Image 1 (tube, rainbow, N blue to C red):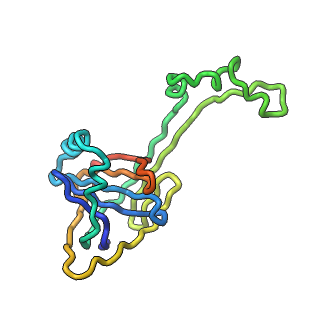
Image 2: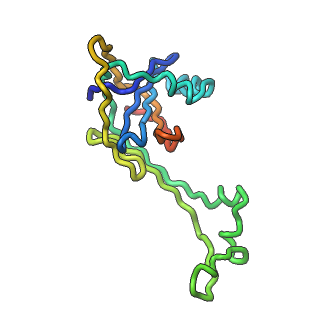
Image 3: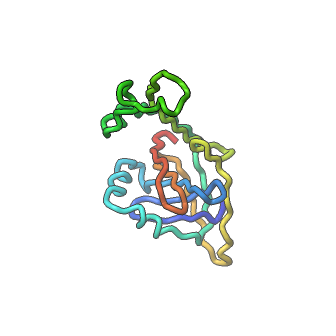
Length: 176
């Protein structure tokens, strides 16, 4: 895949932006210059996400090679929510859901499960229920650079919402 993607060369790593969902979301692929994912994670702890975003440019034809991968996780959030103080909805004596239903039974929340799935293939990217629709950037004209972005060693990815900059998912792919 080759296109005028947003791209940045940072200290020790490169960043590629792959937009989808009509530009509402982006997948940021962070590829260390060396096969050193731990070094990349350390570098990110000493910089801000806004610094990374401010470094992005769209002045080069980027030739992308990204492996197929799928990451799926399931989290039971009941214990976490209870540890944060949200106890009443899980307690038969404290929950007050009975007024929501026309019944004499007492209702409680039994469990809270969060599932997330990220899948990247030649057909696109699926994150949760978001499906990739690649947008094409404007042609910067003659004299543009060409860059190879080949994720042939471990890399990090971040999926964020474009308007707010909120990070929704992040992960590391160790076996491209």
